[in-house]
Length: 310
Ligand SMILES: Nc1nc2c(ncn2[C@@H]2O[C@H](COP(=O)(O)OP(=O)(O)OP(=O)(O)O)[C@@H](O)[C@H]2O)c(=O)[nH]1
Image (cartoon, rainbow, N blue to C red; front, side):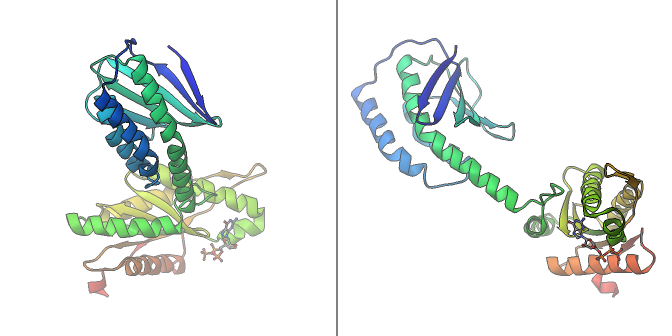
């Protein structure tokens, strides 16, 4: 069944619904419904976090819609689910100005009547603008933390995640290692082939490092041709193996900028988080090890001694 409702620039498409039977709302139910309509718009304005918004909508509307499960999906990335799915379902595709906002599915044991569907659609009209605002906010947050050229997290993302990883490592008493990697003689690439070729090399290096890492590890573009890689639950011995895997993979890249092929190498410094050590100090030690790798001839991995050994 396909049914569309337009409210201003918003479009709700009912993709699937239960068989309709009329029910009459009692007086108390109407009053409860009127109360929800009175307070919902201001409640939905209290957050820009999508998870929180959907939680509030769910909490406010469940008593009058009596659904058993609430499910929201956006680009396969985000999902809120509650309870198990039941036989009768209403599935809406939400859009605004042609922009997809997500798919919402409600299920319950009892059929959805026409008046239930009308009520749900009126409520969804109050939800679409706040969802749009949350998605825009999420997009703005993510581009503020992203390096446009490589698609990796940027230095701000690195600093935020370093704090979180240190916290996790301390709480679970697990090792945390940091790799700092710098492409060797990168200036020569720009000078010999041009800035666009340098940019192409940065992008290929980023993709190569991501391929060489576990999903739980993260690589950031720290700045220029310098990258940082955070390895959770990894001690310096294991980090060295990862660093060598990356170093070898980078040395095997044959970069093509559309005009010619060229290759290059990278050097890496490694440090393992020490007890009570601050994030900036961990970076300093890894960066110092990187400096040694550069001094010793490049295309090398050097481990920082632990602070106790210095
Ligand atoms: N194409 C391109 N070049 C960049 C970017 N960011 C920084 N660079 C260049 O990277 C080069 C870094 O050069 P240096 O700091 O001298 O280091 P290097 O040539 O890699 O030498 P070593 O690190 O000692 O091996 C400079 O020429 C910067 O202009 C970028 O986003 N794109």
